[in-house]
Length: 192
Image (tube, rainbow, N blue to C red; front, side, top):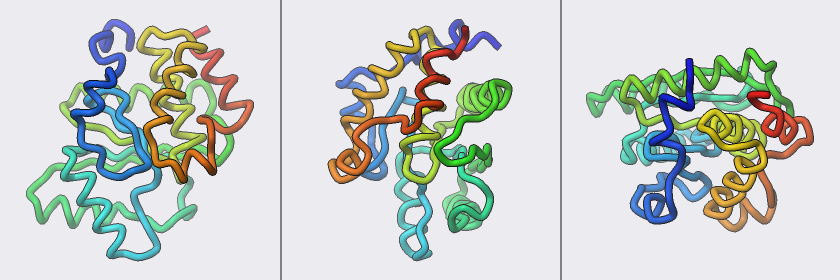
């Protein structure tokens, strides 16, 4: 699938576009009007999970791509299903696990990016998340941006701009995205 040809129009949001999009939570950023990068929407407190899920649904998000490992965190997919049914919404939950601080294989990353692209083409607004929304999520979004026609360096600069819009406490604890050298390298080497 040629992601550059398919999505040149959706490469990214301008600052003005971003200001007009509803951020469901503080620690997330819009990549384009169809793609949101975020921290984990679940919580140990089920009431908080339900609250967060409803904020995502209020923002029009209908496809959730979870980059965490099974059993890494409290699952939220059943609450997503319940809240979606209560609202008569069709939502999709997909797990595409990546080990924390790590990167997937090149084929694994290509499959994740193809999934994002297919879901957007199917009319979904997609949210991609890991635990903190920093390392694994930043790596996927960085490679996505390279697939949209940016160089690896341009993608990292764009990620830095996006990251500047998340909550200040999150940025204090994690001043850059992604997190590991391997994650940076994957973005820089993507599509080479």
